[in-house]
Length: 213
Image 1: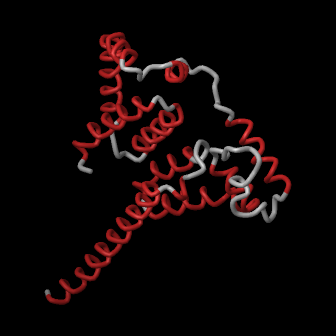
Image 2 (image 1 turned 60 degrees about the horizontal axis):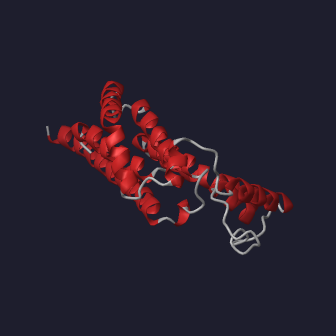
Image 3 (image 1 turned 90 degrees about the horizontal axis):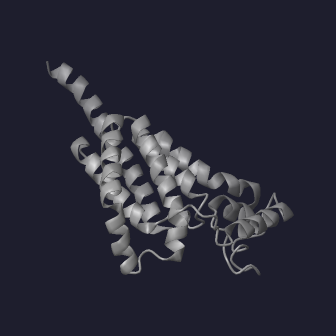
């Protein structure tokens, strides 16, 4: 993405995340911003300027937007609780604790594939680390970090994506079966392969040019 379009794209993404009222998505978005600033993909002054403009717009138009959303049923008891950061984990902590106990029952080999699906809890752990650890044992704890490390190691620009992948694993157990996530990983690897091939072609062309000279 050309640099001039990165901030507008991030602003559109922020609007999309805000409309989900998802605290985990907001946290992952914050991780993404930090990663993009750290790698130099975006400049911190532009991020700060857009954030300040958004805050001013929210202060001015916020009550009208909230009234409109409430009238259309978007703002309800659940979404208001999320906006107020009310304590409500929807039972996820109890399920995560059950997955941890399942891991401790067989920490080396795990309890087998599908152990957190075919159990008496009725919900899955919403945590990729616990999900994989319960299924595959201690090695399962390192599956997602290993994938994130492999992605980040291959391409510096993929570090923000790898960081978001690690953060999202705390809130979702479906990352490794999510088509959008797998497509993004494949695209990053394809970009790396294309970049390596292009660099190799340039490197081969230099001696050929010198020999011709």
